[in-house]
Length: 329
Image (cartoon, rainbow, N blue to C red; front, top):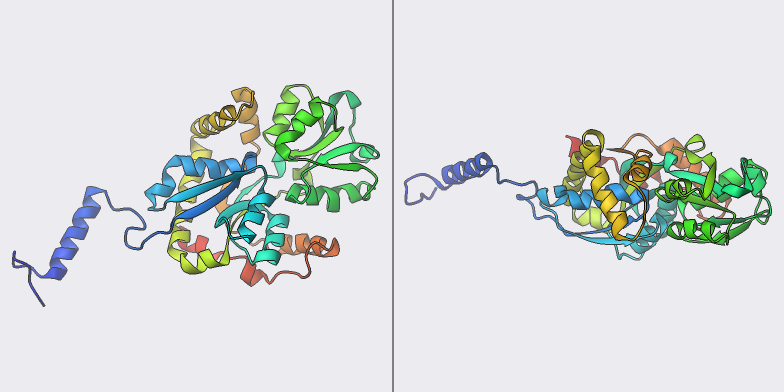
């Protein structure tokens, strides 16, 4: 074995220098393995704000990962970007993920949050509506093709005696719906936070139903199959960053709220911090991978019956809990 000029072996030198790096506190996850740059998609409604906060927290960089971000109004648009391989990672609920898997073999690497409390069917306040069946004949704003849109059309409306054609579905992005309610171009909306809280605070709308009572709506972090195959170490390091960020949502909500409030005010939204705080409180951020196969099977059967997918996914390929298990290990 060769020796360095100091007389110690190369192995001893490397061991000693590595220990020095660790002692100095400058070692970073991912230093041993080159991390890939992530193209991160997220929606600008409340479902995407945990991801937005993740990117602003510094945790991604602390785990040796660089990123590019791609913001869109709703998760189904991120899913479409991923199917087109324009984005590597993105969040959306079960129905959109199932469609994304059917179209582009997308895989789920974690359940990031549960968002059933963030979604409401709301009607213009002056109409005095209290029941879903009262939407018959009215104009309902819906982000067609989104998870919440699919759940409304395929599950909630039929459960209340409304079939396609009984109400006028108005295609609209969730971030445009409050303006539509104010202008009275629509009578009701299927919307997500913070837009529901804004409409409520402004006295424009009242709640008919909260989705939590129907579906707790787990939101997945999905990835393209090529990305997880080529960069498994990056995926694990990325999920470690998520676990760190989740602690802020539990232990430092004021810090989280300030960052997200800055985002919405920068986009021209006018709301109080109190209103935003109520909206953030509806999101349960808890990165994990519980057994969601029964839930996903049910969602897939609904989509299959509605002819939105051609077959039930192979869950062993679509759901990948192994990355989160390694991140927690």
